[in-house]
Length: 80
Length: 159
Image 1 (cartoon, chains in turn green, brown):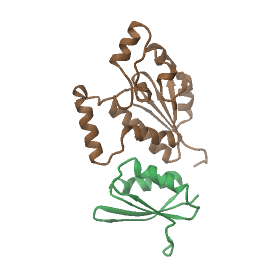
Image 2 (image 1 turned 30 degrees about the vertical axis):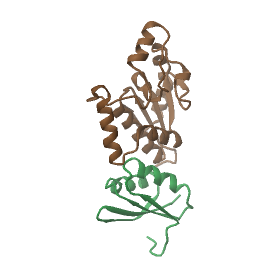
Image 3 (image 1 turned 135 degrees about the vertical axis):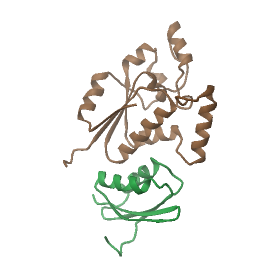
Image 4 (image 1 turned 90 degrees about the horizontal axis):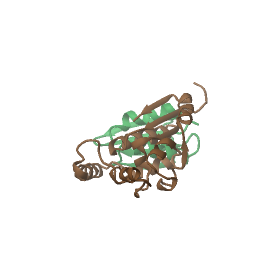
């Protein structure tokens, strides 16, 4: 896990419910380079399971996932 | 795991709002997860990809066209439709909670490259023409085509 990396793209997914968070992340991952990190904030608790499932299926990495009250912040790294 | 893309095939038989929602949600998510996704629209399911005009040529065909009029905005929930009031209530509840609307969800599927296949026999029986369907739904095929796709797929669903 790279502690000194900065996200190259920040997405606001707050208010979106399944399937939109995963759909938006899938679209965004194509716009960043391999090795880049996308930071996203969401309010749908489902993302805590859905984003790791998406990452496993697509071969990408969830570098971080934190929850602060209603807002979930996660980092997704493009692996390939 | 091999590098071959995974495939997902969904048969949409039902023409209700809730079933269409499930089909398009699963399809868009499958596509977002890198799966080659196909939806085969058959029988009532064709309503989800019809333009919404009146269809049919003969007497029975036109009766079906009126009673079973298609269009993504017109289809209602499989229960509690109450002549359209239930449909309106569900749409309002979903909008208030931030759920994506059905037409936008269908467009998301299209944008993600989900393939739409349409059942030729259903179209013939109900006297629905190519032009009664949305422009993105013009690949009209038979069961064998759908099954050939399904044979290659890891996920096959009947909705």
